[in-house]
Image (tube, rainbow, N blue to C red; front, side, top):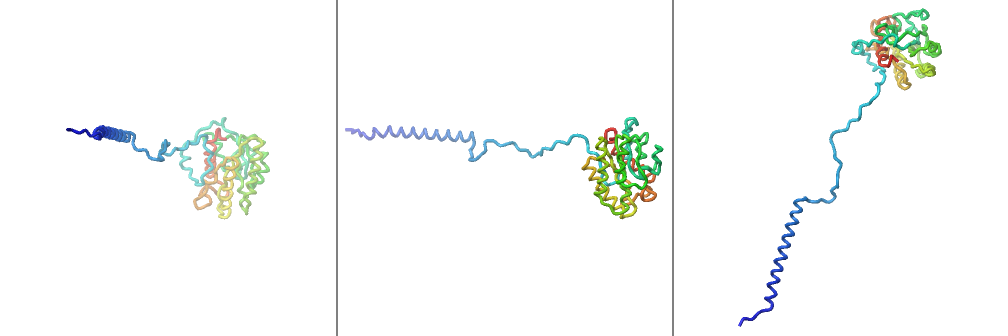
Length: 283
């Protein structure tokens, strides 16, 4: 006779239950692996978003507006600039210029006659073809200092110039000088012109054959450049193209070591014209 064991009846359902749970576990593992493969691993601390980077530097915008006025680089090399034909400015469109100075401005001529001789440094600025200004008058005397010119500023301005052009200081550097005091006289001239709204241009001094005097010329020219830049004064670098590499005048540009020859005066006018042509109507 076969005896039924009650325990066996319980074992078979439990076996099937365990098999079902195992199958569910395997399915869950497979689903987890699939999600991991699809999304990739997640690392702690990863930023949500980062700004794009570039190895190319962003260039600053180019400056706009008119170019600054040239003040001369001290090299004296005008070959390339002078090789270009100057632009013609009709005489009636040129500004009226009055010149304040000493014998280098007067050029051994008589200002009251209205004549300007070829030894005057600005002779070439009045040329019918290559000139850039109209002649408005001269206030100049032989042997005068920059202090005298400052005292004559109102006489020069009374001639109603569109621009006042000053060439002074040569007679100051024969002895020891106080550069700030000389610059104060240039400032007096500018202050007077400012009252009437008339622009001022100043020239750098020509060299001297005497080394001690030439050293003082260099010092005053350096101070003039700095002052002109600070005060908004037009600087006409008429002295640099006359200077020899070792100092003093280039041969043929002066007959006495102080005043220009007609050839030297022409070089000075050309140097000044380079600057004046870059200003609207020469001012």
